[in-house]
Amino acid sequence: MNSSPAPDRDETVADAQAPAAIRRLETRAVAGLWLLALFLLLSLAAYGGFPLFPALPENVRASLGPAPPTSLISLALVVYSFSAIILLLARLGNEPSLRSGFAHIGYLGGFYFFYHFGHQLPDNFLAVFAAGLTILGLYGYQTWSYYSARAREAREQLALALRTQPFASSRGSVTKQPLDSDERLP
Image (cartoon, rainbow, N blue to C red):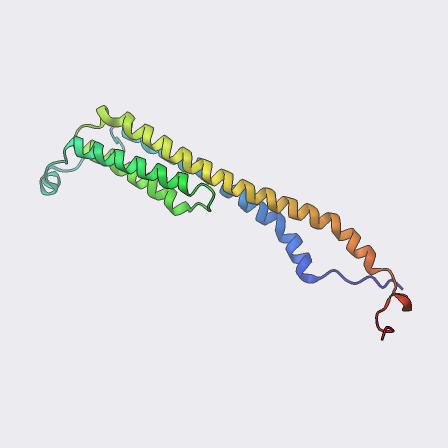
């Protein structure tokens, strides 16, 4: 009769869930690229003058008041860009948040909107576009490097578990001899 122990249920479940967890990490690794693609679509719409969106009626424009001066919008863009880059570089080894990636797209879209509202978008499009590529490029690198490293660690742990599993199951089939036991020692 074979006395090999049945595999532990928790180990079996963990081994079955490991490939799904690795795929999830690999999917998160490319999330920065999807956000960069979304920003490129937003930039394409801004370059065309937002043709898909209706123009604001004059009464709404009048209630909003005049657009902020272009110099203030540009100053805010510079401050935002440098602070976002510094924060991204400071958090390079930490887990990135998908929410912060969408926030960057929202802020950059806001700059496109303010320049468009002030009729200065054609003159300042490249400034917002370059800032967006830089910020979202760093964010994409952060997500890729963090989640790729976690996926690589998970693959290595799974490979190690699969290599040691036959060894552990073969050791379980060895019968104990009375001399191997510590029960007889005083």
